[in-house]
Length: 256
Image (cartoon, rainbow, N blue to C red; front, top):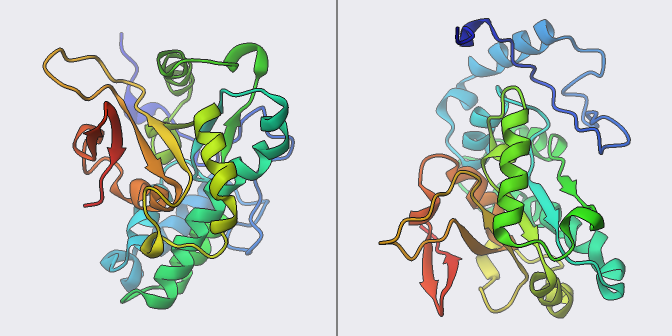
């Protein structure tokens, strides 16, 4: 007999065994001793706030989706390049994902319309990447191999909902070399002043993709780092196959 989905309690707090320390709030929005019940009460109180209900900016829109699910939110990242050069740049490349999301949030807060500072603060405080970094398993791994591993991870998690489980990011040798070439241009760069040719990118992989003979879409696309916040905001609203264009057999994210 299939389990009653309503009877399966989904924990709000996410932790992965690869994290040496659990995520903790630095802003004070989520006290470390907070229980499941207290967190549920906190979310209910947020939901009745006018600014939360209106979701008038992209930051609040993302928060209204991610906060009731698994927290902290973030991206899942795979490392598939293991060379002496990659060892020098890996940590900076992986952290550039977080810093680009924060740069977009900063730009929106200061230049966007109807922004709510509390949304931005909670999203920044609640971001944490999950990185799969295991040379014995992922050195030179193909997109298909990463997809298989990521799908197994998603299926093993209770309440695998939200950005962390929707797709994964892959940094391979080509992506890392692009990061090395353009890393100096990253400082202060926002979504508004970047182009596909002027900044690093990563590959986004969809876990449940199945090949369709009539389609050029192959279940993945490249995306500039500055578009990662926008990708998270799109969430389930747009299929990934409709987010990209095929250029020289390489699918690239296209702005809406």
